[in-house]
Every structure is written in C-alpha cells, then in structure tokens.
Length: 113
Image 1 (cartoon, rainbow, N blue to C red):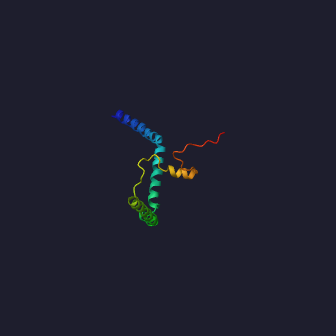
Image 2 (image 1 turned 90 degrees about the vertical axis):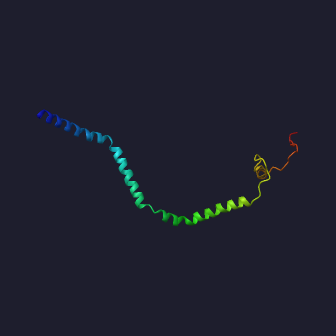
Image 3 (image 1 turned 60 degrees about the horizontal axis):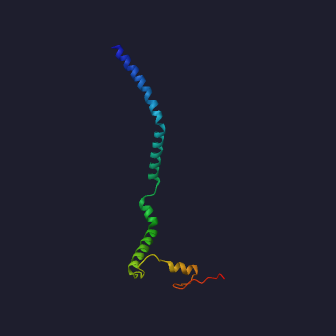
C-alpha cells in the first residue's frame, strides 16, 4: 500500500513540475491573446457606434449616390457612339493635344535635303 502511495506522490510531484514548464513555453501565446483580447474589448467600448458614423457621413453618402444616379441617367440618355471599333478610341483627342494635324491619306513631307 505504501509503495502505491509513494509512486502516486512521485508521479504527482513530477507532473506538477511539468505543468508550469509547459505553460512557460506558451507564455508569448498567452500574452498575445491577452493583448488582443484587451485591444478588441477597448476598440468595441471606445469606438463610436455605427449610427454615429452614419450621421456624420450622411451628406457624403447622399451626394455620392446622387452622382452615381446622374451617371447612370446620362449613360442611358446619351446616344451610342458612332465608332464600331474601339481601337481608335481617343486617338483624335491625343492628336489634338499633341498638335498634329489630321492628315489622313497624305504622304509625309520630309525636310531632309
């Protein structure tokens, strides 16, 4: 009987020493979890409510919605483009900005003599 009691005491002392050693291996995990939990809790408690944010930004949200609605209306009301191919899209504008005249079909004039 004493032998089993003695073995039990040795086992309990041995296992009680192993638990803190195993917990020390995960101390950074516990610390990170605690910091994350505290920061999440403080963010939830200190952050403004959704209605406060909505009441602050409602003019911006309404003006954006009206602008997008106007874009959709003008897109439907404007006539479709006459160009079938999209390869030359904006080429006239680039030629105008670059200052090149529209000389389609005319040969290039060289200035080398």
